[in-house]
Structure formats: C-alpha cells, structure tokens
Image (cartoon, rainbow, N blue to C red):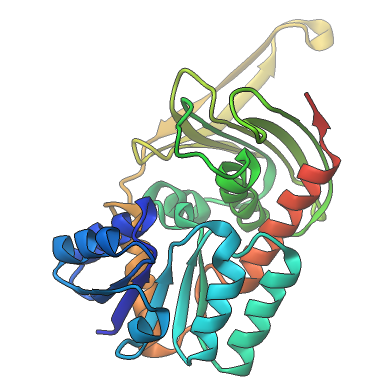
Length: 315
C-alpha cells in the first residue's frame, strides 16, 4: 500500500482525499497547500498531516496526486518527478505542449509512473462500452451542465478534453482532422464548444461540451455496423441496441423498418470512477505497471484541445 501526498487542497484535492479515505488500498499521509488553513482542514478530515512546503510533503511518501490549478502542473509536476516520486496529475496534464512533453521526459528519465487523471476512463459505464467496441463508425458525446462559478479554464480544457481522450480510446486510432466552433457566454473563457473529429481509421466523433446548459448530461453513443451502444455516464447504465432485421417498405427506400433487441448488460464493476482511478494508480505504483491513461495519452488530448481552441470559429 503506497503512501500518497495530495498536493492542492481545493475541490479536486478534497475529492481525492474523500475517496482515498474509503479506499482500502490507498493511504494519504500528507496534504500540501500554500493556504495552511485549507491544508489543515482537509488533513483533519482524512486523518493526515499537512504542510505548506512541497519538499516536506514529498519527503515521506511514495507518490503524489497533483490537484493544483492547471497552470501549475508543469512546474510542480516536474518537481515531483525529479524528487523520485510517482505522479498522478489531474487533467489537463499541463497547459502547454512543451510542459507536457517535459513531464513525460522526466518520468522516463527517472523511471517514474506518470498517470493523467482523465477520470471518465474509469467510469464503469465507459469500461463496459470499451469492451463492446467492434467496428466503430461514429461516436457522439454530450457533456453539458449548468454554469458553475468554480469554472476557471475554458470549456475545452475543463470538459471537452475528457471526451477527446475517450474518442481516441474508442477509435484506437489517431485524429487526422477536426472542425470546431466555440462561444463565450458567461465567463471570460469559452463556455460552449462543438467539435467534429475525424480519425485515421475512418471513425467520426461529434463532441458537445457546455457549461451553460439547463441540464446535466453525460452521454456517449457509439454507432457500429450491427449495433448501437448508448452509455449514460451519470446513471452508469449501458444499453446495446442490436439490429436483427431491416427492410424497405416501399420502392425507392422512402419507408424503412428495422427491428432488433435491446440489451442492458450487467456492469462488471460499480462505484465512483475516482475510486477506480486511485486504485489503478496505487497498483501501478506498487507493481510498476504502465497506467491506462499515460502521459502520452494526456499529451495527445491536450494537443488536440489546444489546436481546437486556436482554430475554432469563435462566437
């Protein structure tokens, strides 16, 4: 069981602490934050020590969870890896391609685990969906919700980056072209984004990310030649619509009928995605495994989102 330090006691740091406290194979011994009151509050809640000094926080641990503001990931992540500790860094891996590549290089140089917190990869509904990928034609992903005052980054690095990573995983192929449009609505950054991604293997992904919606929706629809898989990430439920028969009812194909069956598979795992993510990171630290979401995965998603932001039609 590795000893972990949580670096950053804000919202995500507190989430990691809450989940780690109830996860048997993860132990958080230290919380570090420049605000001593915030560090002390989280440390007390999870039964850990606290400090405002990063070097002190790293002294007695095997690995660190970096949950500070995104713009600090490059600098602080580098310090953690240089110290010889394994690192789980919240998404995005960094806010620049150069910083992301530097973290990957440091992890290789020091033989450290570098994992990126694209937590949706560990959603039980996503785990099931990935097992059902056969012949992907198109992917539609909707990630929308009401505006939150805690939103600091643009919607591309805050929300859409999860789904760019997920689309790459489903496709098993790299993105070769993209089109996008974004809009600023309530903040100083893009609050609404639409992206069309085209993959080397022919799959197309259509992604919607919004933090100005009236509803909270997290849904993935995968269309394949013989079935359609719909995953509700909030309810953690998967439906498989299998086509068994189709026919034209009139000449010229104006009327069409299709029949089949709907399956609702029993998920192989349940529970909060962050718990599964932390357990996987702990396993990688103990058994020196390559993470499911590697530094290279984090870099690939970051590169696409930055390109989208730079080239999108902005409203």
